[in-house]
Amino acid sequence: MESLVEQGKKTIYYENVYVFGQKLKSLRKKRKLSIKAFSKKIGWGYWCVERWEKGDPVGPNTLNMLAEFFNVSPDYLLSANEQLTLF
Image (cartoon, rainbow, N blue to C red):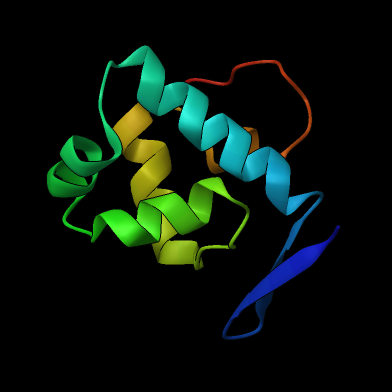
C-alpha cells in the first residue's frame, strides 16, 4: 500500500504505510514506552499514536518530530530498508 503526504510543492511517498507503523511501534517499545507515555512525551493524543502504528500516514512536520525524538532519519521511518540511519 502506498500513500503520500503533500507539503507545499514537496510530496513524500510512503513505500508502505504499514512499515512506518511497525517501525514506530518497534522504536517506542525499545524505549519501553507505553502508547500513553509516548504520546504524552511528544504532546499528541494516544489515539493518534495508535492510528500511526496501524498505518495512518503522518505529515512532514510530525514525521520530522518523530524522527528527531527517536534519533533516526525520516527516511528510516518511511523505508522498508532495515538499515538504521542515525542523525
